Image (cartoon, rainbow, N blue to C red; front, side, top):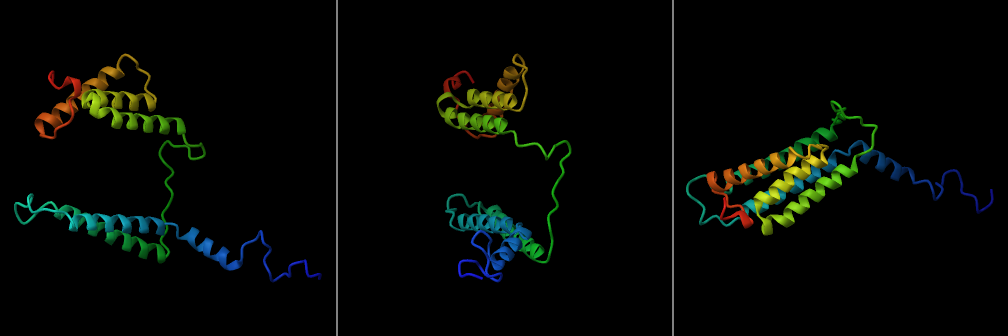
Length: 186
């Protein structure tokens, strides 16, 4: 053997070391631990926010505005620990086949981008034009992005749904939504 040739015991530069391969294989087999870390971080954020919440004004009894966030945060922490224990004991999630989804087909990025654009447009337009108009554009745009092409029916349904949603939230539930130019009419 010449000094330029690698010995059989040494891995070539293109081939990772056995320890690195074993580590990657272990991580691939235990990829659900990523979900555990995400749930753990989310639980910590929820608990931190709940415990640092200023509730002196809103407290009206033994159950205040901190109760539900603390319960949700503790639940997230508990589920992350239980899931991690299950994964480390060999538990594996099974892939869903879907009812009518062909998993061999690529993702429909056009629909995803159209929906993202509709949501972004709604977020931008809700203050200047009000919820009824922005909501109607949201409902009609989502229907169009998801494949509906009933150009006479969809805008009418979207406007009706938006007006009903506005009325329920603003008048019945007392959640103020921006009315925009229609504020005096509604």
